[in-house]
Picture 1 (cartoon, rainbow, N blue to C red):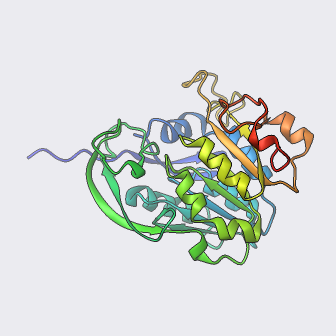
Picture 2 (picture 1 turned 120 degrees about the vertical axis):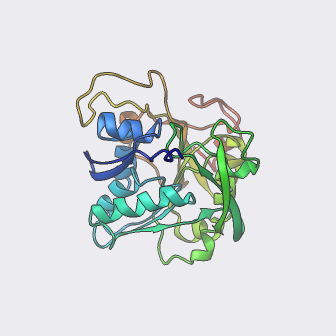
Length: 292
């Protein structure tokens, strides 16, 4: 009988601390191994938004490559709730929080986040084979119709942010591969009460998302950070992903704004039309005084 393939995991020293790294992951794992960091240009922007003592939600935390620097920025008086529905990735997330002595700040939660509480089927993937384990869209339900193939499925809790009844909320980072609108819909009361910064990776449904946040009194900017950081931690010059950028939006209440230096430094582009392509800013509904 042949021995099952072993999942390749290594403990590596990286820019933001020690990380148990899933080496078979084509993006996060490969980047942490090669560069000692993942999407550092995005991470640096997010960290700049976090003050000591902040309450932060990391929705779609994967193994914690962004959770850990957010927790360091929030400090011992802060709190970071990190949600990851894939059981195997959640275990690595917990280990990475623990190995960096951040358990008093960061709280890993094995759950998906959406519009209504309940349960949702989440794939069990073959983590021994190379794949993009952060790119699985659980909202599609049909796990066979995706590039990443599931070997099984399991039911995990589906939570809403509003049900957490948080006493504070300063930043919500959302990377959920298609469930962004569900997460925002289940966080409406929290957003209205605490007016956090909302940062989303947009895989689709951008117009609906932008109009939903506009209705909550938010203005938005495109943020398209490249995956490769020329000044990476390992000083490696090779770019595995030339021309590849993340498609994100950063949203602030209309009575707040970003410093001009921040906008310039991070290449932020005001979103004046929810239907315009990322990076464009032609006038539209969100420019009517309630948006940028």
